[in-house]
Length: 373
Image 1: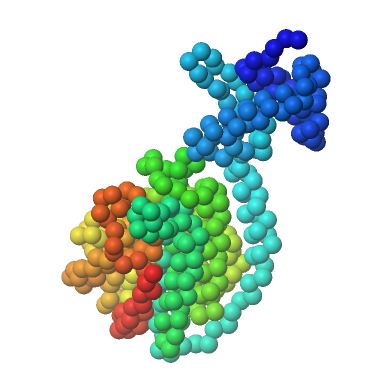
Image 2 (image 1 turned 90 degrees about the horizontal axis):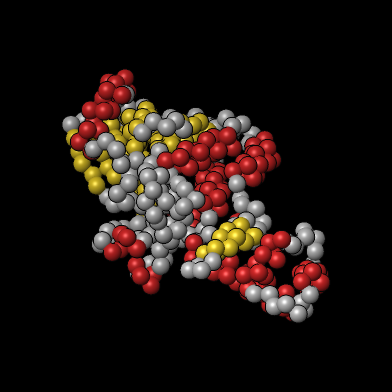
């Protein structure tokens, strides 16, 4: 009986793949009949090939079921293989179909909310900044754990904390600031928009769907308080994905009359409330010293009509605040953990928090709320 070598077994499995409805035991017997070998030998070399594929995929950092085929290259050989565990990669069309089905099922259940007119009203600013869903930090190295589940939990806990701390104030409007690195990466290669590699937890599509759900959850938490203005800030970690996510959220609430959106890709946004104008930007672009004049030019009508002016920036993950002539600029804290790179360079130990602010229509900022982790 002719001996079949390992390389030849790969060719056999490529030529005679397992049928969709074929049991593994039946497949071994069919291969044995075709090769003249025993089912035990077919099983042995099949599992050996599968183990190699698993090892290669783990080294490459990709799920085994997403790899359809590949090449095994050594010093002496170069062999093509087909992956028996391939299930089809999760692609845009599948995610889009799931999102559309969710939107069709959910959007109609938002009846308009009738608000009682408030005489002495306040604006509540809620800003979960730099959440980085998908970031991975391990306490073994950095002293703290952070992953997708922790990120989602902190957003929900932080927004609820802001709601609890603001009770007793008359709130007639909410400004919710979204974006600002809500997602940690912007590529299936686990990189930011510009290609910087990141330590990540979970797959990009799972993190996108989790970010979508946490935004839906916290906006529904806030809707009973007052009407919401959702303001999206594009950012450097997820410039594309963050924009797509904001558009999905706007579509999700498209039939809700109590929430409005500013989801343009503009890097600086402005919102007027009474005698207040609030500017928001991620903070990775224009310098802090340039922001006052930029507001005066880009929102000149708001600037002329108001007494109290604020700009909230993000990106740096720690508190910075400075008063300029006629305006205050402040960077917000982040709830996200410290990853390997930041730990190695000593960029850590700033308080981790989600922050909120309360602005009176006439008197400007009268309170601030910090939910620490």
